Image (cartoon, rainbow over all chains, first blue to last red; front, side, top):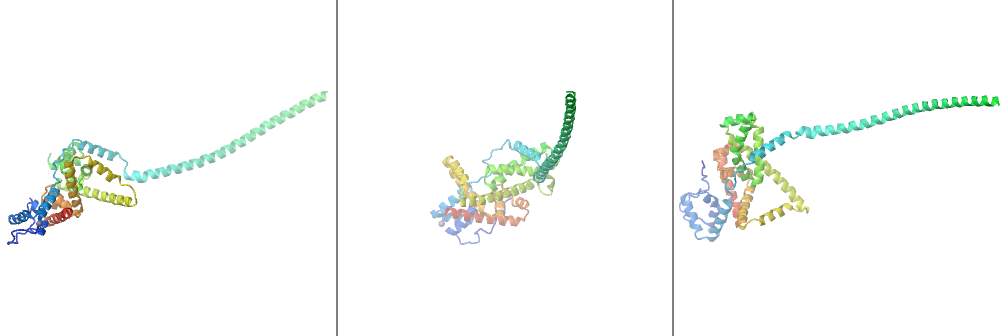
Length: 166
Length: 189
Ligand SMILES: [Zn+2]
């Protein structure tokens, strides 16, 4: 239930038959909302009837004041609930804040570190592997050389044998 | 379903109950948001956020108040938060335009308005004048006035939503009207 606010009403002024321009300005919205007493409405109208300035002002102000209506312009949106459901589902499947702001960067950093360490590790491994292969290839070379040397020696011996036979 | 059955159903995350609740309060919520925001698309978006909050925090609903009062309160809070975000954005934009960045939005709006028929343009203009005046009101006056004028809620209901006294609501609405009157007269004088 609407209650009327009395402070603004001018009913106390018993002798007032007509409002002045100032009083009109102070009471326009209360006049439009029908919150003035019968006596005030009469005093309001009495002024409006002959003051063109106030008449125009009351017309303009009331048109603006009443321009926004309740509901009227809204037709029920049949897809409101469907969209709402979609929004809720999207929200629930979204990554939560903690994961998004803390876990994701943390896992990125750890991946990066892991990458660096793996790189360093692989690098070290390569060095040791290559040194191993170097060693082994050296020993193979040695072996090969020895074999060849020996065979060469053998050849020498063979040659010697040949020459000695000459 | 009764109100407590609805609440119970939503608490148990039952879709049928939630759907019924949304259908029941959808109009009320969109209208409240629209009254406070003055833009239908924004009102629709914020109304969706309101119902998401209802779904997620129905366990916080205390049964001593009416469900509609609780939902109104969420709608008012969400709208006010949105207004704050918009104002912050406007402030950033005004700074940007001060430093010479183009304001495409105003161009878009004026282009859109020139497409409208003349009558619509006039009523749109009146609505803008009123909305600008409403936006100048202090927050509490705006809420009380809007809920009373456009939602046609009683002072008692508004007092419950705003968690204040009946006389405070009376005073807020009275001051809101006096201020609105002043803004509108200034505009036309
Ligand atoms: Zn006058």
